[in-house]
Image (cartoon, rainbow, N blue to C red; front, top):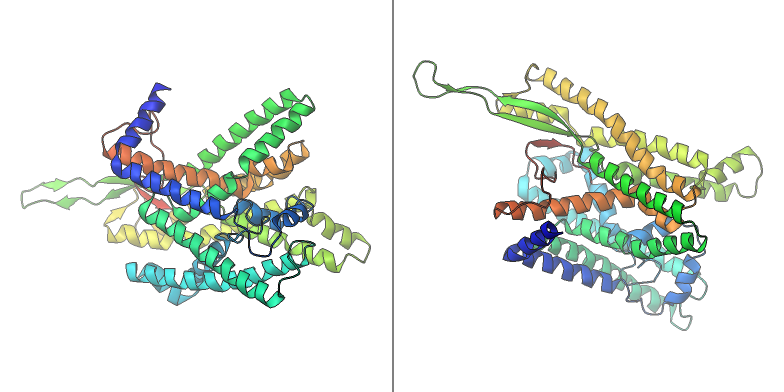
Length: 455
């Protein structure tokens, strides 16, 4: 405890770090405050009542989790930064397939990055207009959610402007945190939205188990939750280190005067794809819902199969979901990890992997290792993704089961580790002890060349 208090004192004694943390907390407070400001003409109580009747695992509830409840409250931040995330994913995928975006990302440096940011912001606005129209249509079709005395055209036009402004403002808040605060702003906004639901879900789970006098299952559940978090941290931070060595250089003209090659390493991330495979697989799994609506009036095996694929607790749903995640993990890893690029980089730096010839052999070696270590990472992400369904079947409250796995847990762990790593960097630069007594918090600034930086 004394060590912890001493660390907090050290953090607060660094003025720059203190200002960054304070600024970040203020921005996050503004973001949460905006989540409770309701759109004009919207009845938040009726909307929340209608939302409580939906399935806990459907797409709308997933969006509501990422926005910290703003979606079901009819807030001005109802869409949050989800349009920006969608736009970022689209631009990132275009960078793999379109030469123009490849050139912006890889060859044009800072000017290319600024151009990509401009394109992402413009695309965010377009996506917000589309998603905002769908959201307002959902509000109008929800009984009692919209004041019928308001002119429909005025309601749509005014609230479209408010929703678009809210999304752009959230994006601006995230960028300000990145520039002047601590951590990645966009990721922190997502994390705050997710974690805002944790206290309510946790209290509901404890009270529910206590009401049934199930204290032992509750204790076992919390212990399992702790070990799931620990395992997720280990996999997120897990790397396969490949030693590299710089070629020897001659120093002066004296015979035998040379410097030995410097030693470094390449980090092959165990989970290079991050949460992207879950996001892609989740989008695919919502397609059976549309198909089930078309087949709802017909009987037979096909209709039953479609209905089971629309049930997040069913065996067919979780089997297909797990397989899709494994496939998308390999696909996305192949997109973001380019062995040829790293082989060329080592060649330009006059470095090599001991025992491996430069060029094609180095490229094949990195590609083989990436393929091998992706399998356990893919399996783990698949297990984490279906874990909420498993624990909910075991008796855990559906709302609390979200935090046992899935996108929520991976985002929480990744963002917290990245933020703590930045805090530790400030402490170590000022000659203070880090956040842990021994070892280092691995992050994007870790020593070595890291391959794979999924979200």
